[in-house]
Structure formats: structure tokens, C-alpha cells
Length: 149
Length: 150
Image (cartoon, rainbow over all chains, first blue to last red; front, side, top):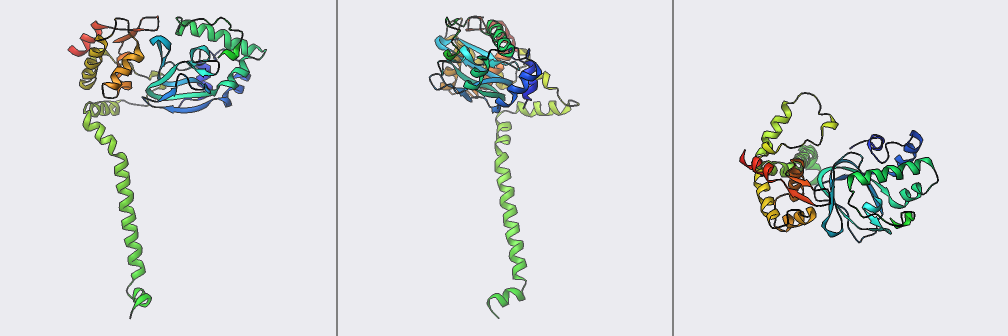
């Protein structure tokens, strides 16, 4: 099972954070082992957690049959990629044995709503990551409302 | 001489302790064997794993984490992987050229394919199934033909 500090540093979403921000995020992440066939999130259910991939492969299935395969250490699965208004909009299925770190959705939203360089860096990196990973995802018009996720 | 007196006189306590120990040890060993039986059955079902096991033990030193997950070479899929790839190919043929990956996985699951998630992952890593950039996937027939021809 990977070390959360190492995974955060390797993540394209969290990798640019300073040591202080990383240390603050670390305790929020809870490691979970995944096995092929495990369902981490089901569309329509309450979105309690977002996920950070350490090892393994995850299939993110969206509405309309579209999907993304995530298999890079540090891939972040959250926000509009996974939920809307506190409800999962996508289904997460583990395709390979590995490990993810789960972070409570509300705790993550609280952090990115702060008026801080760390929160700003996360959101900037997130949009760049989304553009690379799933550029086809529909842009949400009212991005200013973080409760949307 | 009867009862406790007879037990004491004929080492009854020691004999019963030894007996309990033997029975308990036997049960522990039996439970260990049963708990590991699924690994033996997995090897029985897929003998190619035995080759992979020996190949892995030949490697010297620890495998660096960065090297994982290993990308399967489509030219070197195991026999069982080739069979599964053929089954996935049949399912993919029933779909559009640019198909939904979750839909393919669902079809594989309801068709009763062996380990659909793991095998789908193998096809993705072998780049037989590749993303088209719009959220759908395409089947690389050339790579697939090469994989099943080897």
C-alpha cells in the first residue's frame, strides 16, 4: 500500500502543494484496498467520499456510456468527475487489485473553498488534470458554487 | 480404584492434554489447508500462472514499485488470456466501432466470462482496447490478431 505523502507528491492535482498543505491533507485520506470488481461509488447514491488512486486500475463510468480508465498513481477522482450536489453521478469499478485513499467529500470541499494559495493551486491543477484526463466532460456552468459537487 | 483416583494413577491428565493438543493442532492445520485451497484451485484452473510464478522467482532483487503495473505485451498473452480476448472480441463485435467500455464490461459479466474486470484490464494494458478521446473506446483489430496468432 502506497504512502499517502508520496502519492500526494506524485499527484498532478496535489503535487504542487507546499509541505504545510500536504501535511494538513494527509490525515484526511483513509487508505482502502481494492480488488477487481469492487464498486467504490454508485451513481445515485450519496457522495460521501472522493478518491485518490495509489495503485491499481479504476473504471469511471459516466452517463451516456462514456468512461475513463484511471491507472496512474495520484489520479484524483472527485468533484464534477464523480458527483453533483452531493450525489454520485458516476460509477467507480476496480479493474485491478490496488489501493486508493478516500477523503470525505465535505472535508475536501471545505479545504478548496478556503481563500488560500493551496486551495487555489488545487483547483488550477484540477482543471488542468481534467482537461488531460477527461476533456470531453461537460463543463459545469456555475463552477463558482462548490456545493454543486 | 475409580474416578479421579484412577485418572491420577494412570497418567490420565497427561494423556488427555496430549490428546486435546493433537486434535487442536490437527484442526488448525486443516483450517490452514482449507484457507489456502483457493490458490491451488486457481493454479489448477489456469496452469499458465505456474509458469508466471517460476518466471517471477527467477528475477533477482525486489521489483521497484514504479515498474508496476506491468504492461502486457499483446504478443505474449497467455493461452487463457487469448481465449478471454476472443470472447471479448465477440462481444465487442455486437457493439458500435466506438463502444462504451462499461457496456462491454456489463455484457462480459452477464455472459459469465471468467474474471471480467481483470481480463478487461489486461486488454486495456495490452492496448487491444484503446480510448478514442471522447469517452468511448475502440478495438484495435491489428493488435488483437497479433495477440491471438502468437
